[in-house]
Length: 123
Ligand SMILES: [Zn+2]
Figure 1 (cartoon, rainbow, N blue to C red):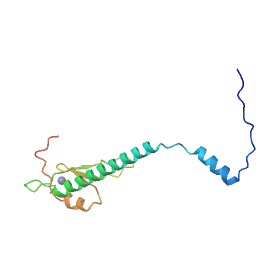
Figure 2 (cartoon, rainbow, N blue to C red):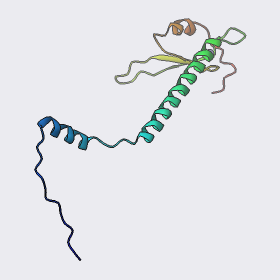
Figure 3 (cartoon, rainbow, N blue to C red):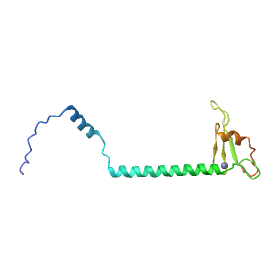
Figure 4 (tube, rainbow, N blue to C red):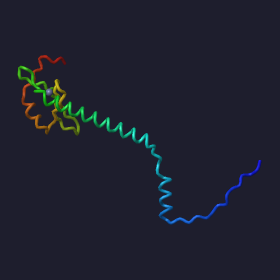
């Protein structure tokens, strides 16, 4: 089997900038443009779905009075019991629209003052 003729290596002169560019290109991971485009489309789709869900949640919460016909609150309140290093704090969730009422929210003080029903709740 005849040996392949190997071309004689020619010396090459590069500037430091050219060498740096070549090394950076070698280190850079390959990015498939099709894969990248698909990922971007997926991210945009997820972002749009998240914005739509967020809008629906806000509309649902805004449309809910958080009270029953008899004027009692539909918010279920929970207070974390005091224990070592934990300051007890109260938060609530509307059983109709799932809105969270956390301390500091403008609706928190208004809704915690509304009496809850409770007769129809089974524990
Ligand atoms: Zn509600």
